[in-house]
Length: 561
Image (cartoon, rainbow, N blue to C red; front, top):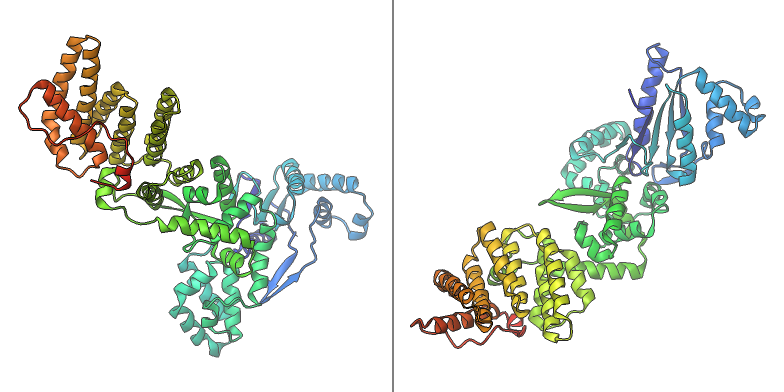
């Protein structure tokens, strides 16, 4: 009762006009009984087409301009001949007088046919109307008004009630039991085909009343009779979409299960992050896309009727279809579990969602093949899951090995990238191992102080099954810090590093050695352990003849454990 303006939005055939008509009819009844604050109801429709069974008919559009709007208001007060004799400014003047003298409930139906400029003029008219009038708008597009109600598709329970009513209204009595049985026996498939759209449900029930078989409907043969309906529901909306909106719809249409999350859409479309968010919001507001939450992720799906229209009517350009389908198939091939021992080494868990699995499997394949992916491919892998620290490890490892980039620049890049990556990770073990692989890069850059600080933080913050690895990693860094201190005659510092390293090696080394970590990681730490014992003159047998820290990525390529 406080709002002077309300909009009903939703896709074609969803029932916006029917709801508006019902409200207007009720208001009209209240007026007739003297129970309403309004003097009259004015219904103004911009509808330019209508579906009659399997035929789409053009209608005379009674509302296509502001002058038409004025004419519909003035006809309540004056005869048509008088109105025709007025120019536009005079009509505007008479409308303002009329709106001051009476209160109206106005319904403006099917406003999606107007351009943004025309809608602004309509908005200005509504905004400047005297107090007391109420406006109910309907549109397939989001009209950007403050108060709106998205008209949703019918759920399964409402669809059953609606189907029952339609069968009763549209079907000859003798046919009713057969059609009721067919719908009941195939309800799940029928609901999927109609997508809970009342116009579509009515369309098929009417066809069944005219002897179309349920199996013919469910087999989704693209009969000529269905084309006008789909065109009626979607053509006007499609014609108003921009290139990015169409690209997103095409991307979902070519997937096998019509479901993609934000980062998968970003990977496929390459639309910039904030623009992708805006575009998804716009399509959801038009009821072209639906959003739901699965395992804490926003999952987007395309309106089923629209999807079938795009595919069956070949509305997606051929080259675009092939490119998007290929990218969609490519990432789905990586949607598989990761080997248990590999998962342990990389701190990955069985809680990983599809995007994380695909992203990690893509970089693991690169490691396994010994490839050197280009920057674009690495960025694509990160797009799928921005928390994939292996991409940053791989990239910076390669830069350090090349020896032609300033070490300080690499160090800064590692700091920046891993800070972002760690903020994107959800699981403790992935965060722990992010620090481990970051430390491996620091060791290559001889940044031992950074290693000890990071490991201290991780050991204090997380309960992890990698405690022994962390302890030995810190001990190895302390071992090198002791060597540096001795070299610069800082003997007390040297002794302190040695003592701390001794304590950590004693506590963690045997536990670390027993676990199936990569030889890539073990080699340096075992070497460091042997050197430390040699320096401490402990009578402990060498573990094996390990060389200094491994710099050969082939040991990750072969995934030697």
